[in-house]
Length: 205
Image (cartoon, rainbow, N blue to C red):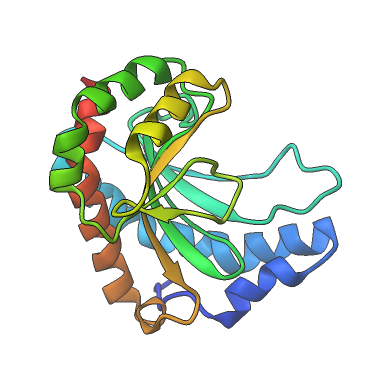
């Protein structure tokens, strides 16, 4: 399918109260769009990083009662899985789209990565735009701009707390016109991931 952006119907998916209804809507409305942008995104990422990157689409297979409050696609160098590796994400909550470089709690070497980020904190501040945001929990909507967040506290939490996470990137409100333009949105994804590439490479060192 051609990707023409995200629309109100996509966000309304998360208003469906029953698990089966919401899962069917995710599969029919949103996942084909993740698939539609994947070749462009994957090829560009592979080129920038100098290694093959693979698409993973969240299946929410463990959901038996409560419907998911968001859904996402992930790009990772590992073909078999992504949660135990640094990875890039494009996904939706009911009121915004997120574009992340994600380090989630399953990451086995997150202590070392967090320490490396702390040592290179000034480089992060200098290379990542102030309007990028940081989330400390991928299951929650809240994210704080890099400009105002206590980065030392965020990285210490990521390092020391078992369930600690660190996600950095952009959130785009559901009403933002850029989401209705497929080409502009894909370009925004490219720009976001390119900006975050030095941080990804630092984590993989």
